Length: 115
Image (cartoon, rainbow, N blue to C red):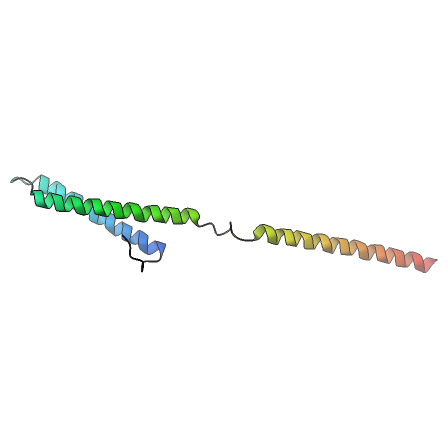
């Protein structure tokens, strides 16, 4: 599995890529050994199969963690976007109301000046 020092997603995925290459090499080695005219070596097959299974498990765990991490990453979900927009709308409403009040005050002032 990946060490804790591999902290970026890209590094973990590059490691998975290397493991996949190694898994293919192991599978090729086992196939070559099975095709050996003198018969396959039981120890060789066992060692390669054990390493193969360990590598597959490590790949699976790393990919599962990366998928989980990608699904949890929602940069805009925790943002206060809706609160900020609401505040901006409220500010616009207040600016409009102030302009209406200023207009009403001017009308009242003009009316009182004519009396």
